[in-house]
Amino acid sequence: MRIAVNTRLLQKNRYGGIEAFSYETLKRLARDHPEHEFIFIFDRKFDPEFIFADNIKPVVAGPRTVHPILWYLWFEKRIPRLLKKMNADIFFSPDGMIPLKTNIPCISVIHDINFCHRKHDLPRLKSLYYRKYFMQFARKAMRIVTVSEYSAVDIAETWNIDPHKIDVIHNGVSDEFKPPVTQNEINIKGHTVPRPYFLFVGNISPRKNISNLIIAYEKYRNNYKGSAGLVVAGGSLFNNRHIRKIYVKSAYRDDILFTGAQHKNTLVRLYSGALALVFIPWFEGFGLPIVEAMKCGTPVIASNTTSVPEITGDAAILVNPADTSNIAKAMAGIEKNAEMRDELIKKGINRAKEFDWDKTAGLLWQSITRITKQ
Image 1 (tube, rainbow, N blue to C red):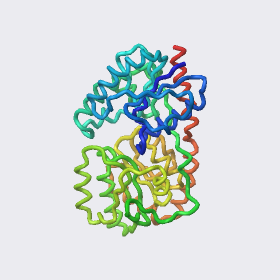
Image 2: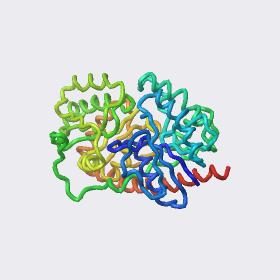
Image 3: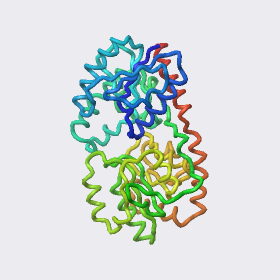
Image 4: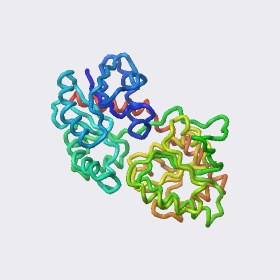
C-alpha cells in the first residue's frame, strides 16, 4: 500500500499537540510497517531527522503553507495532482486538512473544533477558513480520528457527522518526559527561573486563558501570602493584547516569566521543577501538557471543562476556568499541603501510564486499514 501523508507540520524546533501527534505516530507507523510505502509531502525543505525509515519517500511541494490562501492552493491544487501522479492508495492528514478535489480515500485527524465555538480567538481569515472548510473535510474523509471522546461527540453533533466513522485515539506521552534524578537551577536565555514556581505550558492565545491565570496568581499572592513565581512557557499566537495588558498591570509582573516556546529537553526540566502545572484553558481537545506534567511527577491544576476531565481522571485538581479565586485556592493548597501534593504526584504518574504513543500508533493503523476494507 502506498500511503501519502501531509507532513507540512514536521518542522525543526516546532512542538505542539498536533506536531507531537504527527512526529510520534508517523515515526512508529513507518517503522512498524516496512511492507508499505509512505510518501511524506512537505511544503518546504525538510530536516533529515523526519525520514524515519527506508520505506519513506520525501517529496517537497511548495508553496509554503503560511496563509489560508496558500492552504487552499496547496490542498486543492497541488496535492490532488501529486496524489494522482504518485498513484497513492490513501491520503493521511494529521492536521485535519484534506483535498476536497480527489478521489483518493482520505483519513483526517481533527484534534478539536475550538474554532467553531470560539471563533474570535483566531485572526479573521483563519477563523473563516477553519469554519468553512473543516466541516467539508470531515464530511469528505472516509474516516476521522480525534483525540478525545469529548471531541468525537462535538464533531458528530456540531457537523451532523456519523459517529461510526469517528475513531477516538488518545495522544501518548514521550519517554523523554520523566522526573530527573537531580534538579539544578534552570536558566533560559539568560533568565534564571524563579524557584519555587507554578508553570503553564502551551501556545499563548485567548483560548488558553492566560489572563485569568495571571489574575489567579495575584490572588494567590495577596490572599494566601504565596511566594512562588509563575512561569509561562509557550510561543505567542493570536490576539494577545488583553493578556499583555493584564500582565503589565500586575503588581507581581517581576515574578512572572514568559519563556517563549521551549524544546522538549527544557520542558522536561521545567515540569520537573514546578510546584504544579496550572493548565486552565477555556476549550481543549486533549491537553498534552497535562500528561507530560504527570509523567514528570508534577501535580496538575486543570480546567473542569471540555475534554480536560476525561484526560486527567481523578489525578488533578479541577477548577472552573472562570473562577480565579478557586484557582488561587488550588495553587495555595498545592504549596501548603505536602500530603495532598504527594498524593497528586502518585495519581498523576499512574494516570500518565495510560497514554502511550505505541498504543496510539497501533490504533491509528487500525483506522487506516479500515479504509482499505470499505
